[in-house]
Length: 87
Picture (cartoon, rainbow, N blue to C red):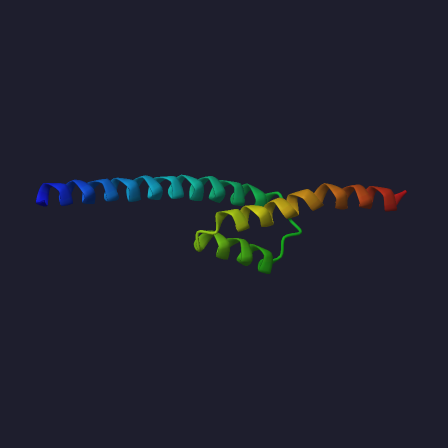
């Protein structure tokens, strides 16, 4: 029974390591996206940055990415509107 328990434990550890590795990859992918995003989004407020960081720190990568995408999607429209109002 002990070898079986050890085998199960090793399988569980491998699964956890694999999940951790995937989370880490996702974290760094998001971290790099965030650095680029902040550098290219001057209209971002401190609160916006905090909210995005908060989601990343809590492992809520989808929410953080959705927030960034929301800003990225509104930016071109805003620039387009500015161009229209200048004329």
